Length: 231
Ligand code: CA
Image (cartoon, rainbow, N blue to C red; front, top):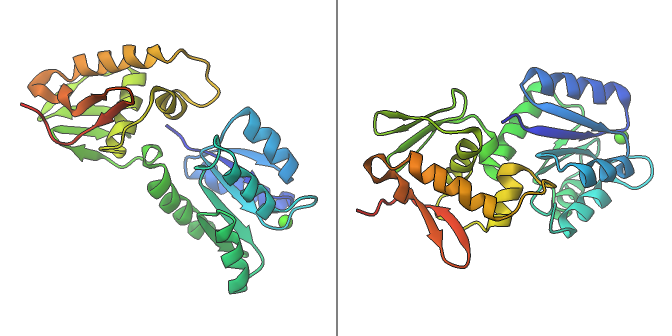
């Protein structure tokens, strides 16, 4: 899945430069020129990461970062602050407001992309294209191939994303609504039992060599991926 990045920056030249570089690196982008516009965007569609300029007309980037951290829907949204302020004190203020990282202006596009990759790898590993191997399963997001041992497994697009998300967060239990948010996308109105349907399909596809036991039901809580297989 292409990561969607919201660029919040009031200077059109910088906006365009960032947008161009992100798109060249395979990201999809949305643009906001003020904190207010950014809120409207985020309320409609939650991006995967926010690049947030500190100095904005009206309310500042810092206040937007605090707002994002205060809401349950957005408190885990990765944020990178862009700042012309270089003093250490300001960097600390940015990080305390909830930013995952900050970049001082002027910055090179190369550095920007590297920072974005690092933050996504840490905060939203399901959006990176890294091949992942856990237990007997190998999943490649670039080619969309899944293997159990050496056998190729065919999965539908939702089962693929579901498996990917669970594999990059092993041993963590996710409720049905958390899975809906992370796999189907937030603001998607799907019944929670839909998750069960797709988990069933996923397990069926993985039945080879008991690989389906990687996907575990945690009664009353949801589902998790475990790297240890039950015999
Ligand atoms: Ca600015």
